[in-house]
Amino acid sequence: MSTETTPAYSPGLAGVIAGETAICSVDPNAGLMYRGYDIHEMAQKASFEEVAYLLLNGELPDGKQLVEFARQIAAEREVPAPVMKMLRLLPGDSHPMDVLRTAVSMLSMFDKELSDNSHAANIRKSIRLIARVSTLITDGWRILHGDEPLPKRPDLTHAGNFFYKLDGKVPQDWQIRMLDTIFILYADHEFNASTFAARVTASTLAGIYAAVTSACGTLKGPLHGGANEESMKMLEEIKTPDRAEAWLKKKLETKEKIMGFGHRVYKKGDSRVPAMREIGRDLGKRTGKEQLIPICEKLEEVMEREKHLYANVDLYAAPVFWMLGFPPALNTPLFAASRVAGWCAHVVEQHDNNRLIRPRSLYTGPPARPYHGVSSNGAASQKR
Ligand code: COA
Image 1 (cartoon, helix red, strand yellow):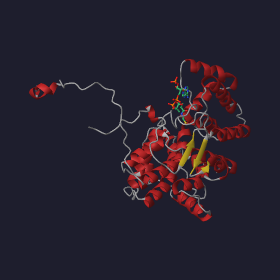
Image 2 (cartoon, protein in one colour):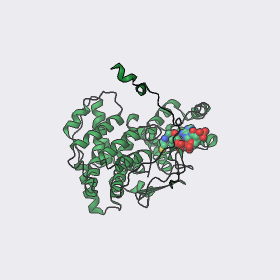
Image 3 (tube, protein in one colour):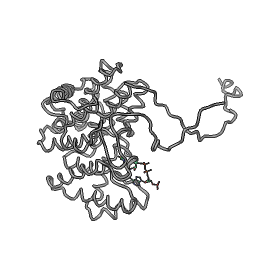
Image 4 (spheres, protein in one colour):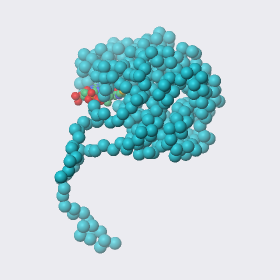
């Protein structure tokens, strides 16, 4: 007699604890910590490099370690020439997330440590991935639009370099500070879909490149990272705050999903929203595009009243990226330029203490039945 008990079924794995992590904790009552540090203070004060180091290594770097880590990232930005050549073969209307996924996959073949899943090799590959994902996005975007990639600037930080490599302008300090904050807010979020995809892939002992490729594919979907691109389309459609309520009610009547709202874990609001909303208000004043944040605020008000649903970080990320001068098609890649640090940290953690991730399913197909296929009576062999 089997002693195996049937585990409880939870559609979409909602509420299921699927593994352990010491990297990040999400509190459903709107708290978020990286390795025990509240992200809100770090979002204001830290650099992306400092947070990436923390996620990967478990502790904050001292001054010397931070300088060295930032130097390593800057030194690893160059992408192998064949990968750059491949980028030139892609159709001009390719989505930048598809470009990124394809290019990350190709990068793996040029990493001499591809098959080494040791902790030390995984950390070295993480640094290369963090550096090169950014290059693939910026240079890939330029190539798609018929522009040549720009010369490297190892003196710029991860955030500063992203701006510069896109349009050749070195950003002002306040722009770098803002992008650092956004990158910190996006850097990790425990077992979100793309990170979970990365961990599932890594758990088969496939390497970190395979895991990050899976993660890129997963992030693109509009129910996950793709929501920040979709949110911008929605704001462009609404245009002005006074049109927001009527627009939203009409969508709710037809049971449409409203991008930038709802969350699997947060049911009382996303912990990252207040910081992102604040950046949006600041940018509204700086750029004169002051109607965008009030549209989001109106949507928040109506959505809470009508559906008891709250905004997630992607609602405000959309106008923030727009006001920072980024095209909406780069919203999800910008998310990836940060989340790659989280993905890598989770792969390192998975490989350091691995167990294959392989859940069960609840079978809903037909009951057992006799086979009457064409080859059961020899019909297939007679035809030959
Ligand atoms: N717009 C309209 N209705 C929504 C909604 C949204 N953005 N998010 C959830 N709902 C509805 C669901 O349809 C469901 O309604 P029902 O009970 O009548 O079927 C109800 O709210 C509860 O949904 P829930 O179980 O909490 O959602 P989930 O955990 O399965 O899904 C998301 C979470 C994030 C996928 C979902 O909220 C969503 O699709 N949001 C839009 C995409 C988005 O912004 N993604 C980024 C997430 S950070």
